[in-house]
Length: 214
Ligand SMILES: NC(=O)c1ccc[n+]([C@@H]2O[C@H](COP(=O)([O-])OP(=O)(O)OC[C@H]3O[C@@H](n4cnc5c(N)ncnc54)[C@H](OP(=O)(O)O)[C@@H]3O)[C@@H](O)[C@H]2O)c1
Picture 1 (cartoon, rainbow, N blue to C red):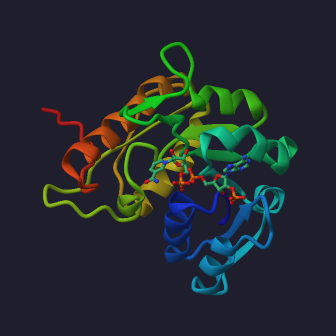
Picture 2: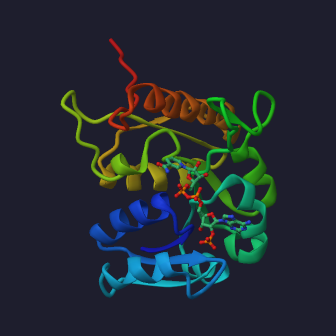
């Protein structure tokens, strides 16, 4: 599969590495086609890795991943060209986090709206699936925990798109829990605040969520 990744940060590179390890072709996009982090990533990632602008990555991907700073997400999507996402599965890993001095992490949008819903409104012809936002980048690919794999919660409006993302997650080593439509992002984005707050309290990023059933 061809994967376009919008984002050159820890998440873009962690997911890029995962897709490359699974044999997919990945183009990592940035505001600047010469972005140093993207070029450095591609130079060590083999022939299936390439770089370009946000628009290049969105055009390239059969599946497009959003790994963007929330404050820059609208701009990045405009630069990428919303038409380049039409009909595609879009994996939204964004968390709309605010870090204010002296305060813990908080959400810039929430309760009655969410980043996931806003992204779906910016990309009305795309099939947005919220995924990968509830865990740190170090555990996104093949999470290895002593009690077995954690669960990835996802949501989105399109059943086929969620099936595609569920299959990708299985290859990445994650069981998936589908919590419904994209408005479920109102629940998944606060889970990130819980994840980050716990990381700050413990000084560790080695935790993830699991739903226990009987
Ligand atoms: N870090 C984690 O472990 C983790 C885990 C789960 C979810 N998340 C979420 O995943 C997303 C990505 O996180 P990250 O830590 O990998 O990277 P990040 O630093 O939050 O975002 C990096 C990307 O945002 C783009 N960007 C920043 N300002 C922009 C602007 N004004 N206009 C357009 N694009 C802009 C950058 O573009 P350039 O390439 O041009 O610089 C870069 O590609 C965030 O929403 C984060 O909350 C993070």
